[in-house]
Length: 419
Image 1 (cartoon, rainbow, N blue to C red):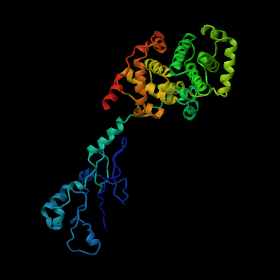
Image 2 (cartoon, rainbow, N blue to C red; image 1 turned 180 degrees about the vertical axis):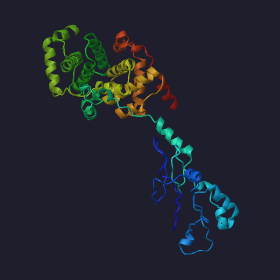
Image 3 (spheres, one colour; image 1 turned 30 degrees about the vertical axis):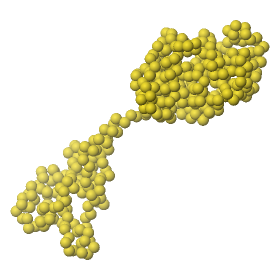
Image 4 (cartoon, rainbow, N blue to C red; image 1 turned 90 degrees about the vertical axis):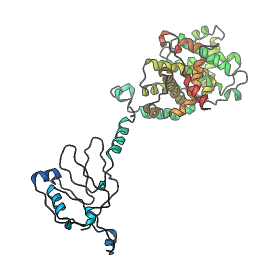
């Protein structure tokens, strides 16, 4: 019978947690086959007077000239070894001194000394196998961040991935053109918008409103200004009405109109506030349900397995971005991811973006670097100039003095060194 030797690499390499076994190609190996050690102990090995030679390719084609027989791998006992030494005439010279390397055939033994069949397959060096195994061990896994909330019905673990996929699709509808100040407005500019939002941050803090209320307020202001031209003296009125609408949407206890008249130093009457409220709702077509950066920020902080310091730092950087007009070109999900990344760099002093964060945000570290550098520059100037509302808010014990944290300047320095 013709025996074919396959010198290709084995396909049954050891898998982590499984025992290493081999097999002959095309041969069924029974489970009761005895191992080499068992044969030697019981003396039950059958001796063969001569080796069976495998026909080479020329012989298979009918050409027997200059053919060299190949060695067949079989068990060798001590008694057979002595027979080989005394009766060399039984073996051709090419078998006793084969040109083929002795490493072509190896025996794999079971780690627990259990009977293992012999094999004609070649094996990879154990060193390479261990290297592959170590790479699998140290590969960073993606953590299931919702496993701890499986019993919390308010966390809606069954639908949370679908919800955020829907948010990602809808976030573009809540965005505005980054050039709307030039195309739509003629009497106001970017600086006036920054002053308005910086003042609303203080109002929001004094009223002790929810965090999502502030983000929705800024979104309503930008969406309204992108569609409706406003004169300079009415800009503050737009901000007050936007906050009133955001409170009605997010808060349980809503500030009354008289409170808004009071904080504006009676610059606007009750009638003017109600008229602007109707105008804003009609302009926005009563569309108040848009995903803001707050929605994504809470999710991404969970993916980062954040502590209280990282959460406060991320919100601090995010609110600094609300003041800056140039930041409206980024999507809410992108701003949220960049704020978490920049906060980690500021707190830990090094770049850190885990596989879990990348998986849940769908943004890589390289994609976030541009926005992160812009955040670092906002962080550097937060305590200087006239617009210091966010800095003073987060420089209190309530927010853990997050504003005192040093900015991650090494991100900006690396950009300069690369250029």
